[in-house]
Length: 266
Image 1 (tube, helix red, strand yellow):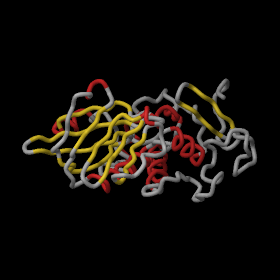
Image 2: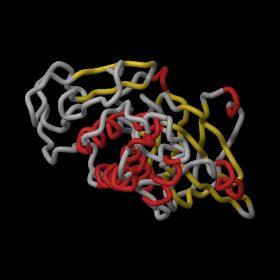
Image 3: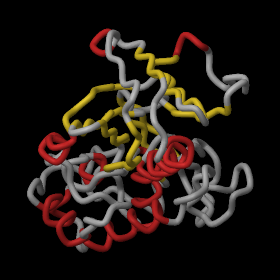
């Protein structure tokens, strides 16, 4: 699940494969960059901001940032020369970056763009504090969430303008551990800073590993409390976990451990 921790881990993969090397070839399979040639650019750094992946490139007096968003199904993979590109169908390839040492392949990427690095801050300035970044500030995240008291806490956690990096998985798990119904209005949540702090800890615990766990176990079927566990018994009370879908937003919750306060809520 490409949430903030997955993007952070992906940035480390590209860092190991590309940083410090000169691009010998680039292949963009997206219309807006189809004729772009980044040959001769040095990959200076690889980073993330919430769910946004940022590959920074330099050549002489030029500094560019290759921006991509993984959304629900995007990924980057790195291969040695001669190694078979495995894992995803070739028709999903959107970007290929080649150096003398390795090849980085971007599959099913979204919002692929090339920016002047000087514009990076301005283009991402709408994002809230990054849960895995140097700018993380739980109090600021809570302040932003509190500005819309009528929005549900589930929606507020997914709003990247409040805090950058939370997706469906961490939304569900944070709210379960907080004992909050996903449909509780923000104005009725007693300690927003505590909720934000918990979300940050859950993501930070998974830095450096691909298995996302909130329970502490990395065994299959034991990694989450509610996420992905529709109709299975709650690990605390035994009540059947429920699920609600709305477009790409999916919510899992325990109706007993996370009681809704208002009539008519799920």
